[in-house]
Amino acid sequence: MAQHVLLIEDEPNIAEAIRFLLTRDGLRVSHAAEGAAALALLHRDPPDMVILDHMLPGMSGLEILSAIRADPASRDLPVMMLTARGRDREMAERAGADRFMTKPFANAEIVAEVRSMLGRG
Amino acid sequence: MPLPALTGTKLRERRLAAGLRQSDVAATAGISASYLNLIEHNRRKVTPEVMERLADALSIDRQALAEGKDAVLVADLRAAAARGGEQGVEVERVDEFVHRLPGWAALLVTLDARGLALERAVEALNDRMTHDPHLSQSLHELLSSLSSVRATAAILAETPDLEPDWAARFHRNLHQDSERLAAGAEALVGFLDAGQGIEEQGIAAPQEEVEDWLRGRGWALADGEPTAGLEDEIARLASSAARSLARAHVARAREDAAWLPEAEFAAALEDLGSDPLAVADRFGCSPLAAMRRMAGAAGMQAGLVACDGSGTLIFRKPATGFPLPRFGSACPLWPLYAALGRPMQPVEARVQMAGQSDRRHRVVAWGEVRHPQGLRGPELREAAMLILPDDGDGPVTRIGSSCRVCARGDCPARREPSILASEGVA
Image 1 (spheres, one colour):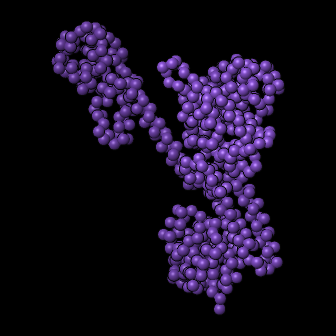
Image 2 (cartoon, chains in turn cyan, orange):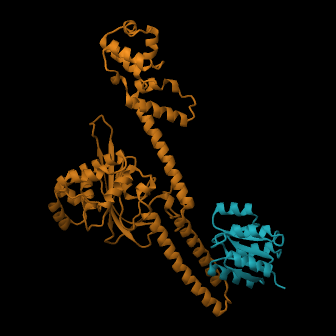
Image 3 (cartoon, rainbow over the protein chains, first blue to last red):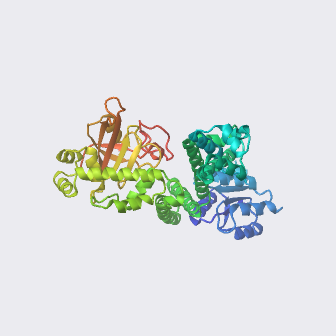
């Protein structure tokens, strides 16, 4: 069964590109564009890892990350954050993100990072 | 309540001016000579009662001894010392300092006030860069669009077996994002360019204030314009340094107008075109004056930069597609600097500015040497470069605005790395 990635990203075209890349790499990708929907999806269909954008409407990426880490069911879930600035990265690190990808990212990089986080070599 | 600071100094001056001995004045006032000595050296504060007796002994008005301005200076210096941590500052001798070196004391207070103002301005700018919602939102928009363009374009380029419906979707996304990117970049440039007024930013060099004022008047001063109206505008400039620069600019513009009267100058432009040397020759004036007149002429669309012997830009009137550096030095490849190094020899070139696609300009530069203090005085140099729309063919010199914002990767004159990705690496 394909490993499952939850992608939380409000920019539909970025989400579409990432979804395409990971799907072609043999993964199942579900997508949410904002925090409440993402957390609901997380509980309904628990993923193997999360790709989380930092700047989102409503709940920020850091708030979503805090919610993920506060829930015993998802406390150890691998989370990669998509960040823009160095300071965002520091804040994400403190909030418990496992990996970071700086926008604009290279496709090969994000695929390689996801593979690594899922233990797929 | 003690009297204002420096009263002792004033007392001493008045006593000496009256030719009286310390002991005599002290005896008349009913105090000891040693106590008066301490008072006169500002080592003891003096009560109003004793002050009154001393004023009577010297036959002077007590109010004349109250030095309000100096007292304010002393208070400001004490505040400055406190802000500086007072380390090694002889606060107890502040009265003496103000009395002996009032000019330096006033300068120190002015610098302290300026330092405080700059600190506030830096804080405000820092806060703006960090928290400005417009700036933050614009940058986020740009980054998001850029991320999408990069990822989508790479998919299209690197996936030869892409299904047609996916290819169509990604092409559509690419188009959408490129539109967003263009709009976002335009909005950001507009925000940073027009931004907020100089007063609102709270920080501007005097030269920028003057240029902002001239920009507001279309860079022109009409020949017959009454001085009173101009002076009213100048008086509204924020700093005294800017007002001084503006007055010097007006004086020079008046001199230029005297050399090149409006009607005759317009006729010369009609006959001779945009050739500052030919125009200068007709009027018997400096080509620099002709260039300044041309830069102010409506319809010529000419920019002008001028520099002193150090290469520092002392005047900047921008031309379309020819961005001028706001801070730091300009591109060393500008013909302006060739003219500075070879005074009295015109330098003409067709130039292409980095990052301005195919737009080109014709520039004419001229430098001069002056000895305003005669043979034994210093040699002063000044050069100017007229920036005109390109109107011909010929070899093109590739230049930039300044190294920091110039992306030319193969530039032999680069003095510091660019913050932009390099282009044109050979």
